Image (spheres, rainbow, N blue to C red):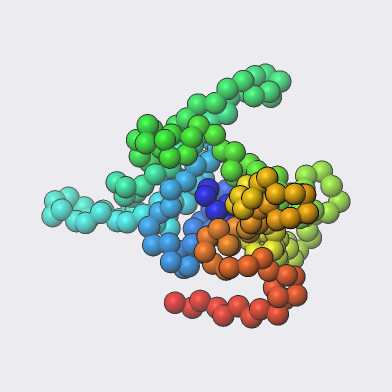
Length: 210
């Protein structure tokens, strides 16, 4: 939330499959434990977390040995369940602690999903393939994934966000520098400058096969 960085994305037929792919990418990138999460009330993420990051409990010596993965005690996952009336209008929200204590989760995330909702809106504005009720849909899954990855790269490396800028001299005259603009990758310490599009195209990414 502090950097607005998009760390991984996954695509699938449902939220569980898509979440599993995203978590598997995060795990491969070095996220060894389950990340702290907040989401809306739709299902799927809990099951994906357990499948990717869960562990089978140690056998205690009695009964049948356990075989199913389970969540770990230090996990943090909060759902913000939206309540709607018969016309579909939002009437309220209800926090629901899936993993962790609700009080701690609300202090960490707040009772909203504003960050992910803002990111979803930005994605639909920048990538027409994600818009609803248009003719810009993808006919091929590979093209759809490639477009999403390209959009993530531009967002993380090239696009400075107003919410991440730092005050340099707010009272400076109009044509002098007032702010230090940053991209999500800069805020996360992954790069020290705003990239240009040609720099992105000339960069060869080394696969992480570990």
